[in-house]
Amino acid sequence: MVPYSTSPMTVNREQARDALATLLEVFAGPNYSGALRDGDLTTRLERCTGWVKAEASEAASLIESCVPHGKPMLAQAQQRLAVLESLKTLQAVAVNHFGPLDDPS
Image 1 (tube, one colour):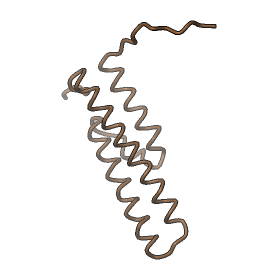
Image 2 (cartoon, helix red, strand yellow):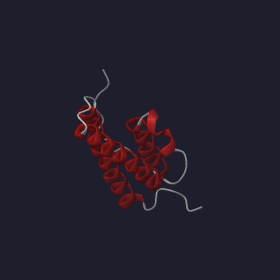
Image 3 (cartoon, one colour):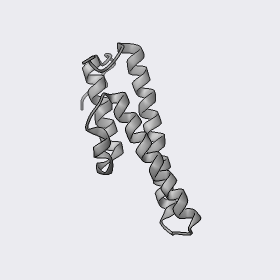
Image 4 (cartoon, helix red, strand yellow):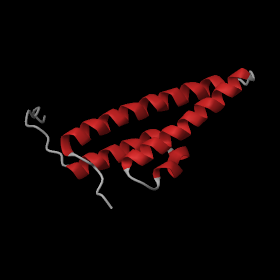
């Protein structure tokens, strides 16, 4: 059995950026791969958020039209939006700690 380590984990700016990008890809899923192709992390988060908001709007329209799969679609979009907001919070924490995560290019 490996004993519990109390030593702090050392993370650098690149690792924080890569971890956030990986989480974004995992939570966004394959339907949003186009939103994740280009731009810095902030741009990709905003693009993905816009697409999920559009999905939520479409789901609301389906619900108004009494389409059965509108409610699950809306629930999924709301969950994705909550995750994206959490990722934005983590990004803000990382930026406060490391400064800008993306290299200025």
